[in-house]
Image 1: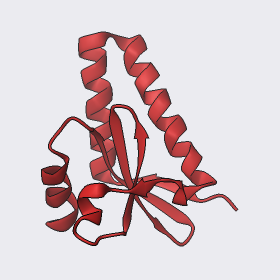
Image 2: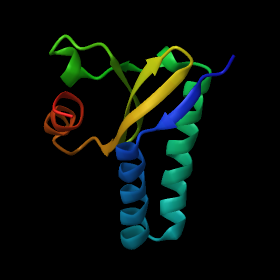
Image 3: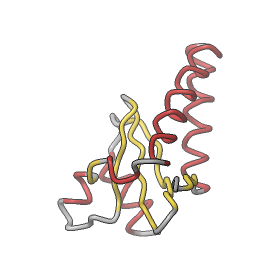
Amino acid sequence: MPFAVWLTDDAARDLAGIVDYMARHYGAAEASRVLQGIEKALATLEESPERGSYAKELLALGIKQYRELLFKPYRLIYSVDEADVFVVVVADSRCDFRALLERRLLEG
């Protein structure tokens, strides 16, 4: 049975911001390519949610609740709960990921 993949409000805002940025700076075609690539990567979680590796910044803290999937240069951080996958962060891997994860997951 496939897992349901859900984007949290934060992750949906992340994705919308990425697509908007790409459209403004690189054009609609590139924004569409990035969106489709991220959506395709997320769709793979329906059948194989455990395929992602643990987010190294969180693993260093002993936290194994969150995994990550890559669509370079983007990192998709998610957790698996029974038959659901919850995507909590979609962000460019070149950002300060440790600070982002601390703000988003540990403080929130």
